[in-house]
Image 1 (cartoon, rainbow, N blue to C red):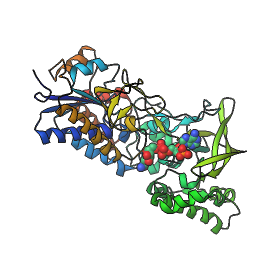
Image 2 (tube, protein in one colour; image 1 turned 120 degrees about the vertical axis):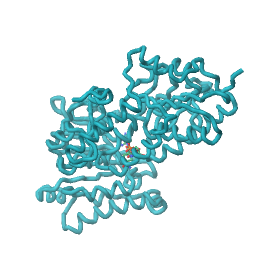
Image 3 (tube, helix red, strand yellow; image 1 turned 180 degrees about the vertical axis):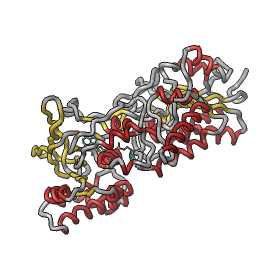
Image 4 (tube, rainbow, N blue to C red; image 1 turned 120 degrees about the horizontal axis):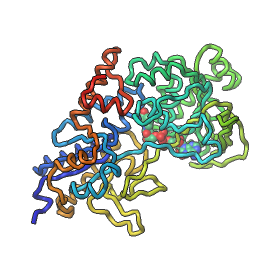
Length: 477
Ligand code: NAP
């Protein structure tokens, strides 16, 4: 009998973002360490790899985008085969994958927005941060145009995505000149009318999720001033203890306190006065507002005209709602309250947490039994929820791959019915799927670099799927 310990190991990794690529790296490391032959098929629904690194990281964060080079090096190993433009669940089913691979690892991330669940979310001018991010990052399935005519916008949520959205809304087209954004996005930003962005936290500053580096960056955006109302920086005993004991929290609070102190030091009677003075000086404004829970998005004739906020009071790590409301006049509301993963055809999914139920990366049956589903694994945001920085996905993927390779080592993964590693390409070709392989991705990469070079940039992204596929085929123009 052929045991899985004798044969070429075949693994599918579905989703080629950081978690998927780090999983590939861990699989190759394992194969090298035990001297096994392995082929890892790295599938993606997009014609290009790297997931949120390409379509989630803000374009003015090239340092983070530099991680793409590391991922590219990992992906260059011939034992990894990129199979782009393949939608799992539609082009390739779970049953297909079970016939073709010893194991399937899902790392599809999280790309949709959580809702606030308040009235008015359907109004024109009410957006999810992820929608906006996918637009400015040139995701091929994003809307081609984005309305940037709001003079005043509110961003709900005080995490790093909220910072990205606020900063990008206030960037000028010139400041984005050197970035890799597609041409239509560049043109969109050139027409952006936004002057004031309010970033809204329902709890106090000690509970903001910002990281200090990203928060401080707001001070460095040319033409933008940051305003914090000193009265907003209220701490109760628990918040004060947190502020003193947690380094990140302390740095975040200290930065916010500096901005609040500047309002008083400049002799402004209030944060509103400071805002009016900044606008009169031709500056744009970011206002951080705390202790305000979004209650309703207000509208007129189907479009956003304001955001109703309910004041809250600190109550340990939670807040008490006070019943006192205030209306913020804004023309757009962005909710940056967390991303959500979406279910994959036939794969267990917990709708409450929007994750694949798992134990250290081994997929569990969603039914009550919660038993391990042999041969299925998960890593990244769809495994643990949308938290952590890119590097967090490396340890997350390593944990999953340990489980997977332990199962391979002890022979508990059955041999797939189809032994030929070429079978997946044949199957997809039979189904008329235009697979973008490693060569196709290299051609897209070269086309984007050439487009960028012509404009004096490192890269300009191709935005549409049709353009990407044409570049992958080597079709000019
Ligand atoms: P996040 O850090 O979890 O922040 C979500 C924010 O939404 C929190 O402030 C949360 O407040 C708030 N929120 C949730 N539900 C709310 C509601 N119903 N009403 C009002 N506020 C609500 O998530 P994220 O900003 O989406 O970031 C996801 C991950 O990506 C994070 O780990 C982040 O650091 C990372 N990231 C990093 C960068 C970077 O540049 N390094 C950039 C983007 C993202 P509560 O705490 O009160 O729930």
